[in-house]
Image 1 (cartoon, rainbow, N blue to C red):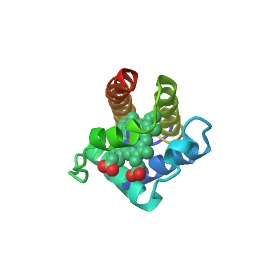
Image 2: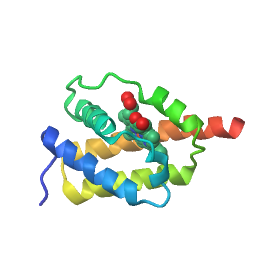
Image 3: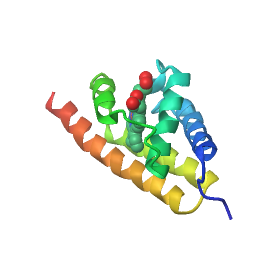
Length: 125
Ligand code: HEM
């Protein structure tokens, strides 16, 4: 039986594990080539900590950031599918429980909103 996500250290482990997969992934790695990892990882830890523990640690706007990033990227459905697969796999490898389910469900719903917004915008352009 695996443990649930119960603290910031668990979130850091989840996000680090997820990005190790992303960096090796043939579809996704190139999107992250210019990322400043120290900064990005600490933002991602705050983002997920805020989702799971309502800490108020993240006050950014991922939709705006992705609009800038994704305007240049031409993402497609398979990219989002792969992103979610890696996130769900990383979560399942490490954790189980209500918070693990919450993380996966939020990832699925946010990815759905992004997909609708950015893929539709790409098609129009
Ligand atoms: C194929 C799908 C995705 C790609 C290629 C992608 C790529 C990126 C990139 C390149 C950045 C900017 C990193 C930087 O230079 O600072 C970023 C930021 C971020 N992404 Fe994604 N992303 C994807 C999906 C998602 C999803 C589904 C979520 C949420 C569940 C998410 C959450 C975030 C957050 C919170 C940030 C930081 C925003 C900030 O700086 O405040 N991303 N993403």
